[in-house]
Image (cartoon, rainbow, N blue to C red):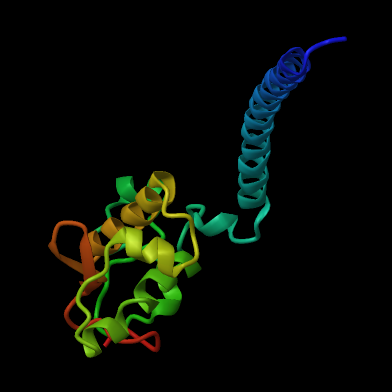
Amino acid sequence: MPSVVGLLEQHELAGRRRVEGLREEADRIQAELAAAEEEWQEWAIARRRVGTVLAPDGGGIAVEEVVPGPVAGSTSRQEARARSQVPVWREGLAWSVLSVDYQRILGALPDRGRLHQGPLTCQELAVLFGLDAVPARVEALRSKAKRLVARGWLAEQQPGRFTLAAGVAGPGGGS
């Protein structure tokens, strides 16, 4: 007849083998889970990219379009090239001459001055517009904001911080 200690050792050995087997299975499942999560993230990124491309507004990224009418200071050689969609700001010029993306940027700024909230960064704009604050989105907004600065619609008194330029008013018009 086996001793009690011998029976306990057998049960302990069987328990140890079961624990080792379960640990190996857990490690295998963890590795499989990590691979599945990586694949899932790749599909999620692909879906977002396709959604961005197929979105009616291009996912918040404007497509350059030609604005009818002369551009201030243009010459005949310059007129042969594609014209900017952001005209130089002048008193009385309405926001409606701008594409929707540029209007959204301008529209985020009037209340900030009135409420003494200060200038906006492009990262804050991205979050405000419900976009992922990833470098590609932020840089696309920065490019648009810089274009608005160059054309006199926005001011950039500190690098990367934008406000409406002096004289530019609310969405109804430019004066």
